[in-house]
Amino acid sequence: MPIDIRQFPCLSDNYGYLIRDRATGQAAAVDAPDGSAILAELAASGWKRLDLILNTHWHPDHTQGAEMVKAETGCRIVGPEESTRVIALDQVLSDGDQVDLGETRFDVIHTPGHTLGHIVFIDRRGGEAFVGDTLFALGCGRLFEGAPEQMFESLDRLGALPDDTRIWCAHEYTAANARFALSLDEPDAGVRADLEAHARDIFALREAGQPTVPTTLGREKRLNPFMRAENAADFAAVRAAKDAFKG
Ligand code: ZN
Ligand code: FE
Image 1 (cartoon, helix red, strand yellow):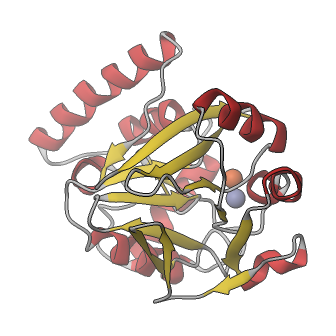
Image 2 (cartoon, rainbow, N blue to C red):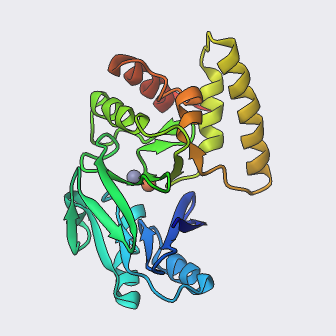
């Protein structure tokens, strides 16, 4: 049985996620950007329980609400070792681990680059990927801790998932990412046309205050300039150009 997903904007440009395993009613938050916002969304959901927080990395906009939510709900907090520098974890996760939420299983993949310990959560059966700040719609996370080679490899591992995998990222950065993508030379006319059409949709959605997330892996592999990089050097050049881009 699939999971229900409630996506809600919080802080300036984060997405919070509450998810529920339909078979058992067990529920989780993906990251904890804002404890009050998560508790308000939980109340609005009517789900009446929160079992887990699935933390992707240590940054404050992914951890700072965790202890408030745990105090209120009694949930367990699981995440990468690096997060223990800012919050207490009930279980430390590493690459290859599995986390069960009722009958839904999440595979943990280590995706260093944005931070060195960053992990993502993949529900393979449901085709859902919670990718934190590793992969964004038309973008990827800044390399605060990792090297370009690491992020290239991390994106490559995500790229091996099925094309119809839904990508739930932790920020709404898509319009700025689209402006950057459009600024790049694109030799393939078909890709260029698809990018322009997709960017128009993105700008219209944002104009209407609507989310552009989730995206799909197949779309990102075709249009995302970071996923299109053929090697780590190529990737590093795109990342450096984005870091310098004043859209
Ligand atoms: Zn981050
Ligand atoms: Fe973040």
